[in-house]
Image 1 (cartoon, rainbow, N blue to C red):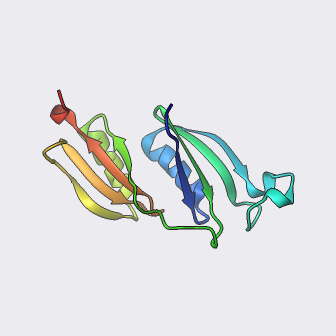
Image 2: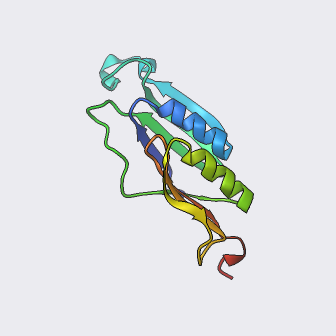
Length: 139
């Protein structure tokens, strides 16, 4: 069993998820819009263009997301998505991309557990940790 991350956005789901696919590499697996539902009773409040569900694959993991109507949306809190980089260069590239328009909570730097580690809240309000353990990985 592998948990699936499910994110909610306030009208920016497709934009955000395609951005993550571009930054981290991956693919869009599917997208269903509010207007795709054949039964108006099964639609969420809002326009037909809102994303009801979008799935992407990043590495070996699947992430899913949707737009949340304003009255349903809650700001993300209490979690970070941790991304394990395969090199310092990859960690730097991810950090630069995710922090663009976001808020750096901890700069990309060496720690006692990782050659590089950072914490960022991106422009969509999602919290990320970028980690490259390198030669500090537990043996």
